[in-house]
Length: 110
Image (cartoon, rainbow, N blue to C red; front, top):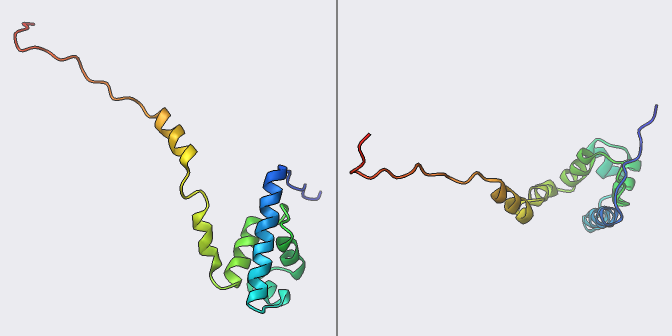
């Protein structure tokens, strides 16, 4: 039984394609053949080609391995969702509100 291809929304596919193109340009700027990048990343040349095309069926780890093989670009992955404004707003809405106990006046007798 083969793996099913990931279903991605068109906007996400556009982002993956852009990421693949940026990876390809980074490789070309370094004058590295895809075979060498594949060897350094421990993947096949065909997987490097798929990454450069923005394939959603390639494992995320393979993308990270190629970024590492290009000279430490995997550090850029730390920027993903770094400033999650929507997530923070949702979290703030879900925070429990502090409730104070009713104030007892010193003149009340129990």
